[in-house]
Length: 301
Length: 301
Image (cartoon, rainbow over all chains, first blue to last red; front, side):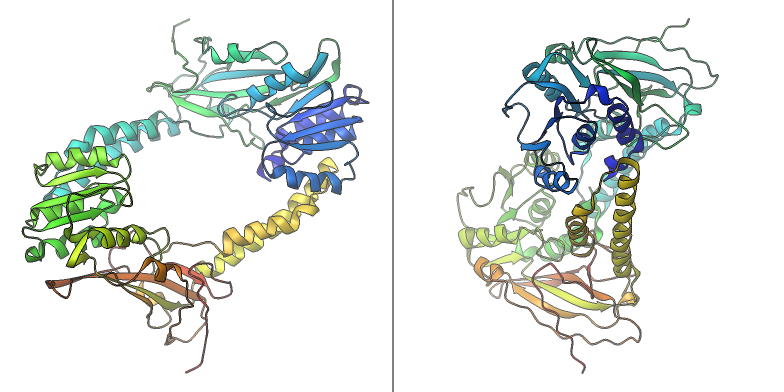
C-alpha cells in the first residue's frame, strides 16, 4: 500500500495518463511489472482498447481480482511471467511502467522496460515515462552524513571494549579480528546507501543533472557501460559541505510522433510538502561513494 | 559480537567448562556449530587434548585465525562443514554446543546436536549442556500484548482510509483486497513471535516447566512428534491476565557416568539484572499461539 499511497508517484502517473487520453484512446498498452495493476487501470479508463499487465510475482493473482473488481477484465489481461520470457499476441502502442529504484537505477527494473521496448513497442510508440534524469546536489551542514562517521567511530570503540572484556573475563584475545571487523563496519556504515527526506533548505547549492536518459534511445549496453559521470554544482551557501544527495525526475512526454498534450513530471527532489517513498540518497563527502562509480571532482569556480 | 557479549550465555559456558576441568582434562571434544570457537577455546584451556570445532559457514575461516591467535591450533581443529556430513577420525568424550533458539526450539540447532550425539559420542560421554527446560509463565497486566491487538486494529483502520483515498483520488476500488490484507496483518501482528525482556514483577504468577529435555535420551523423532504439551500455572496476582511468556534454562550436569563437580545453570528467565540476548517470548492470551502447537487449558484451582 505504501507505494500506492505515495501521492507524487501514483498521482503523477494518474495525471500523465488520464490528462492525455489521446495518447491512450484505442491503443494497445503494455504495463511492465504491473503489481496491483493500478497503471493498467488508469490506461484502461483513459480509453485503451487492450492492456497487457505483465507481473512476475504471485501479486498477479491478486491483481486479477482487483482488475475484475473494477469491471475491467475485458480490457486488462494479467499475464504472470517475466517480461523477458512472456509472449504477447501483438506489438503495442504504449509501454507504461513504474520501474524506478532508489538513486533512479539502484535495483530498478529499467532493463526489463528496455527489453520490452525492443521486443514489443511499435515504431513511433511511446514510453510512459519517456525520460529520466538523475540529479546530484551539494548538502551541508548535514547531520546525517556526520552521524554515519560517528556511528562508525563508536563501533571502533565498541570493538576495543569488546576485546578488552573478552581478554579480562575469558582470557581470549579477539584482536586478530579487528581489521576484518572494521572493514565490515566501514562497508556497512560508510559505503552503503542511505535514505533521507531532505527539505530544500538543507541543500548547499543547486542540483545538476548527472545522467539523462531518453528511454526511447538508450540501450542496456550503454546503461551497463558505467562510464564516469561528471557534473558541475554551484555551492551557494557558506559553511561546511558535508556530502552530496542524489534524486531523480521522470517526465511523461510521449513519443516525437505522438507527443502528449499535457506534459507531467514526477520529481523526487527535496520538498517542503509530502515526501515520495524514494526520498533522496546522500553520500558523505569524506567517503568513496559506492554507487554508480561516480568520481567526484571539486573545482573552484 | 552480541552473542559473545551476552554474559549469561558466554559466562555460563565458561563457568560450566572451566570450573569442571576434570570433565575435560585429556578428553576429545566436539563443538557443534562452533562459530567463533569460543567454546572450543574454553575446552582447550580446561585441558582437552583434542577439540573438533565444526562450523558450516565461512565463519570457519575467521575462527581458524582466532584459534591461532590464542596459540591453540595444535589442540583445536576447525572443520568447515555441516555436522550431518562431516567425518571425524574418532569418537568423542564430550559434545559442547550452544544450540538454543528463541523459545528454546525455534530455529534451534538441537537436531544437529542429536545427530552428532548419535554418530560421534562415546558410550558414557557427556553433552554440555546436558538438560534443557522450556517454561511458561502467566503475564499481566502487560502492555505489549495489548499493543499487538491495537497495532492490528490500526492497520484495519489504515486499510479503510487507503481504500477511501484510492476511490476518491483515482476512482479505483481496492475493497476486494480487504480480507487478504487483514489475514496478512493478523498473521504478522498477532501470530508471529515477539521478543521482550521482562522483569520478574511483570509475571502474574509462577512459571511451570512445559517441556523437559534430557539431551542424552531424546530422539529427533520425539522432538518432531509435536505432542500436545500441558502444564499448570498458578496465577498469584490480581488483575488482567494478558498472555503467557516462554523462556528456557539449560543445565550442565555432565553424564551419569561422569557427572560434573560444579553444576551450572544458564537461565533466560525474566531478571532485574542484565538480560540475555534470547529475552522471553510472549503470546497474547486472546490469540491462537502459533509456536509449538501448545493448547492452553485454563482451569480454576
